[in-house]
Length: 495
Image (cartoon, rainbow, N blue to C red; front, side, top):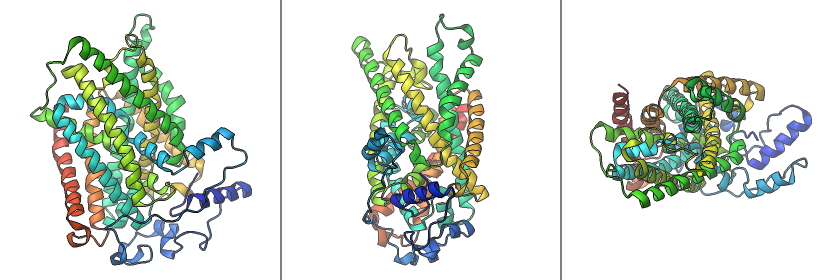
């Protein structure tokens, strides 16, 4: 379902019914649209930059309360399902309604669960067990705080993409920098998912009974290409992120099962052989910093924050905090389990994706786990495609919600093809995770959200209090440290 900026879910459903019956879309009437101030007309957003001092919901910046969470608005009656929908779909949408707590939380969780969790045991090996746990907890908490700041910025500006919010609050120039970093992160994420598929197939084909060609690199790439064509490419074509909510739930569930398999295998090993001597609580030197980028990559969900926020049934900063807390708490628990038990199982021998360390023929439960990881990788690739598309469209001032479906599908298909080809020839996943997570993740997840809320108006120590003031500057400082030291360590490890 396509929703225009500021449009309620029920009104979007009614508009699509009208478009389906007439055969063409019509612009919603001004008197029918919520927040019908002329300054919030979507056309104005495209034609001129947003000025917070003039166009903040019909009020000046000083009148806008950005210090506290917005009060939740009364919700109109939910949309009625179409008559031609199946009973199962109607029932499922009642259980997982579009834009609800479950759908939004699983979408956020699905966008961050992916290749990052596969590289966490290697990150724990680089940083040390205790250091990695501390860093992981801090990054998860800062991610939730960052999502709250982004939701407040989106509520103030009333524009729909990360780049447009950046332009509205920081001006022209930083928005293009945000688009570049967004593209860079999404390219790295998409490439890492293609690498993960190849890593997943390697132990499966490592058997004399498998045809010799499939055990070679070209054979691995052939099967990877087939998986991409059949399962990944179709998921990259929808316009809206909410269209992926059903498969996101399946993907997150399968990642949970994979983590359970890691824990079970580790416990079996510890019971038989005891604790490994090469598991260290702390590490020093360049290796201790290399894992920072992987941890940040694993937790970076801000790339899909705007899409999730505006497709919520009640898009308010309060609801964004609730949904992001549920999503990131669940992801944080999975990250801790995967990192601790994966590192405890393999110790210093795990230096890349943990998929390379298991052999499904020796542990049959990993057949199901590996199949589930394939599903999750497919969803995560598509979720990275959406912000990549938005960043590219921002350079050309295109609006995806007014673009014909076929045109968007052609462009997204081309982007997915380019990412797939690059992913086939990058040798190691940790190279991608470390560099992209530190450089692009530091800007997108930490630096830009802190700067945007500072320039949103009505933000000072006296107005927001010492707690938010300190947390915002700590978020900014953490981003700077990640960009400078994390990027330098990642580049040094490659050289």
